[in-house]
Length: 240
Image 1 (cartoon, one colour):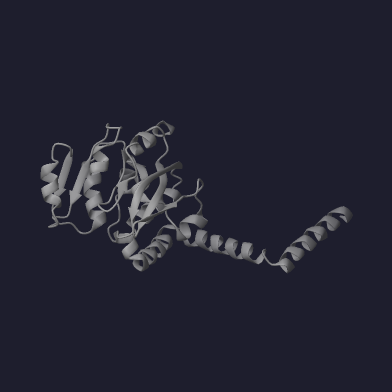
Image 2 (cartoon, one colour):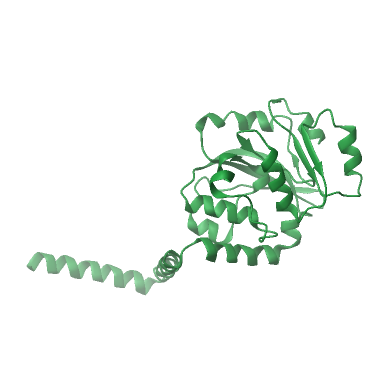
């Protein structure tokens, strides 16, 4: 909260959704009520149900989701990210610093996202700005994906050709004590389920065949076979 309050860019709406916690969060909501635009403190059905509540009452053009264990890396983050918004992309995503036992390591995401990337990876939703209208068009986070609803949402957006733009800035310090990391096995299982649900079977088949072809082409004998086949067709064309 302190890092959000100290941002040099201030034209944003700050919404806090609390799951009726008993760890002192409600006291902080009262203490800083003048600096928080909207807040809800009530029981929910998981982290993505809480996020959906925030989406429904948000009025901004772009939304950013900052979980309680994560924080913005410095006071200029929102100012830097805002400078890109005139580009008009659907989703802007930045890089992260991973916090693990008081050590920091930077994770940089690729500028270009592909199916090969999405099959096993995702961008970090805490370091992303998502156009609010996408949640009306694509739907809210699917709460049946208790850990990986963010991945499923991004995958749907990618498959529907929504535009992504990589901001080459480190945006958040990402806490490894969060839900998705602590439940990594379940997260991966839900990623696979989401992939199978939203990537049509025929496209998945073509994609897997393409991967197998590229894998075979790494072997020298296959490279020679490909060259011989090319030479064969050239000779046939000469004498045809």
